[in-house]
Length: 291
Image (tube, rainbow, N blue to C red):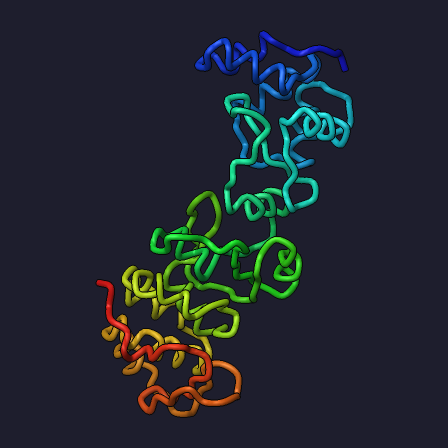
């Protein structure tokens, strides 16, 4: 690789920035002339995440024979790439940034996993999904995801809180990541009540999330699931969306006792839904609608 900062490259890519800023950025994060085409491609395409595979493809197309791992190491050293929690995936820092700083994107590691492992299927869920849907004010420090199988769940545990749940409804693309539909989030909560980190905190966003539900979409999401999941869904919704809960009850009238949580000390019993609740710190029958 040739040495020396590429001043003209910075001017071409960042023409909208003042000359003073350009000089500061280029001097702080220089790049060799041989890497100009590679970095220009990244600047034009502006990927959030660059993987070793995509970098190798760019090098091939630009006629650069230096191995991708070496290029990645040099781009990291100069601050153009920043490490993520996913091995072989980096956050790209464009020249328009003030320096080699992270974007503070809370879903960065999730997006890195998507870019690196294109075949795995999962969706953001629980409070993280509520935040993506715009009904939660904050996102947990550890992102919550629903993985379609145990293997995917295990592969994501280093970057997220995971549980196994396969939605029937399509994922929503929000904040640049796959997110469970509101109906899927509710059914996921009913399917895995002990996987919810804090039901008390869920009160901050749960009524607003249920306000987004469409009755027919809820029915599609519970279709084919166990009687226990269906009963828990109706039990959870009866105060916030009584019309949806009543519709579920009329179609799937409970016939046997269902536990909402582990079989420990009982907090309450619901005769209508035949639910033995050992988890919820609130009575869902007393929750009001946010509609």
